[in-house]
Length: 195
Image 1: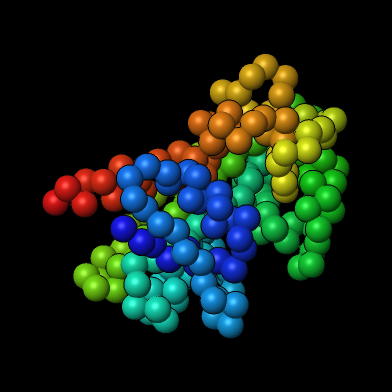
Image 2: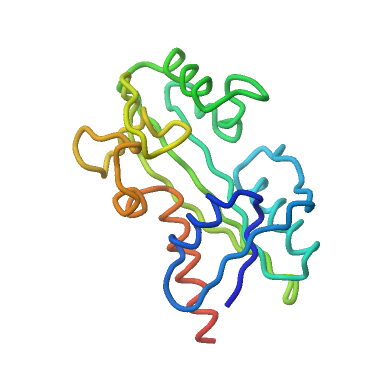
């Protein structure tokens, strides 16, 4: 089985290949000249569906896309869908993380959310798969393995005192929002494949 991942990012393609491992599933990514719609939806689901629909429509292939971000309870759920642009439209990961550390109190509740959309142009079907990972804000960012907000995210279900950026891929995949959503997608694909 082959799926088209609505991304131009090889790192993300490899991550999804790892998360969806098992069976004979092959994850491909978009050609460089394929233009994706802007992520201007009000929800993670809207953004994921927009990208998956565009990829499916443009390629004629079953396509998946994800949107994810972090929600701070102290900030009323912000930055949410604006996680990548929290400190400004062209903000770096470091700038976004610094803003979260300034705006939210240390130890406050955080929640990573991921929604994966699957769109099949052959059948017209659309399905959403959501995952969430609860944690809290560590005021001392550390770790080299993650990106985005990972260095200051202490997952509730992870090893005590370790940030997401300190976990191995295997440890992170087991508890992460993207890992949970990807496993739900994989279970659904296996059911569909068995017919």
